[in-house]
Length: 454
Ligand code: HAM
Image 1 (cartoon, rainbow, N blue to C red):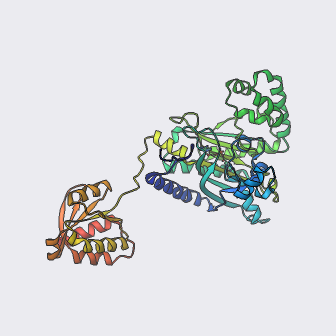
Image 2: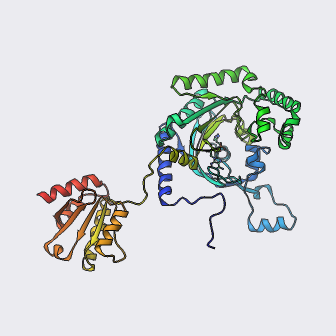
Image 3: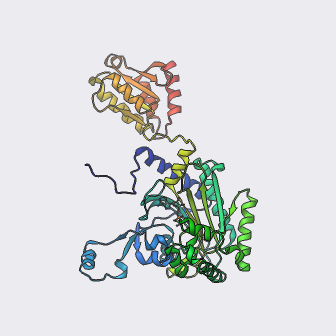
């Protein structure tokens, strides 16, 4: 059998690849209005970055990381030896830790500077059990704003994400925005202890993993998919009842900003997110129809301690990431018409091979002027060239025939209306030569038409 793509990965074939490009461009346009600029970080980092940044007790780090070993180091490991920390590498399961590492390494937020607003798009890797909307390699678009702890950053980021989802075509009424505050170093320890005591009191109703979580990281139990654990955790103490004054004020102001901009949201005190770096605001956007269990299309929050965790000076941060593949599922569920990747403005058809050189040079001239043009490269019959033009969604076909060329004319056929007219080849070429890569299909069609009537 021919080899297949690895389990949990997906090829982006041309139509989808083109949509991914459009998706990224739309994100760059919307986020650009909020001051975000691009950054690219490596697809793999030192494993330690994720252990320290995301948290050793998270599922992402403890179970789902793809760890990469270079050839020489693999031999050392297989031989029972150890390799240096800097050679322990993992494919990035998310983008935040790498971006914060880059911000610290390159001092992108010097003391007193304006916040760094960074955006990225690309593949992330998590060894999860694959299912619809859950892959082992998936694409995210994410943003990180470092250097400001004001609630206005939290609010504008959430607003920005909702604006992006609207711009890309996800119906507003199909989205649910959930928000919560995770507290800070001052109030969270006592809250964590309260959850731990509550879990200890219900230990016989919890799965073995949650019994362990009660010791290592009790808040992770809020994410447990086991129905018994979910029933217990539904009545666990709520973080919002344990926030310190500063965190309560911060959360209150974020919500005021959202309300002020007319954004509807639900408060969900059980929303803890699967990564340990969050402090204060966290949020998630879910799609209510047609998504199954993998219905979170994006999420994020504040991480005011992460820069210190990776060795930098205190630098507050806020960000989010959205899952491209899940957005595609949401768009499909909403009946979105995806544009086709392969299309052209004009197809130049040859009646026979004698006109090929002239057709070839006309195609190049039209491309140089900015049009998307295609011709046959397989010596097809005229009929099958028309079929190909149809398949490529060509708006117009320009037909070159030997007799017409002697007379210096070509025929232009509109594929939608089947209207045809003749025009001088010299007039067409002179029109094309007046443009340097700036011609648009609509303009050229009308100019051609009027030239043919002169
Ligand atoms: P996350 O919630 O783990 O957050 O991932 C963000 C989004 O990526 C999810 O809402 C989902 O749409 C998509 N996603 C996650 N895992 C998968 C998967 N296995 N298959 C398909 N899609 C997936 C983060 O990654 C944080 N770094 C977000 C953030 C940025 N927080 C602060 N700054």
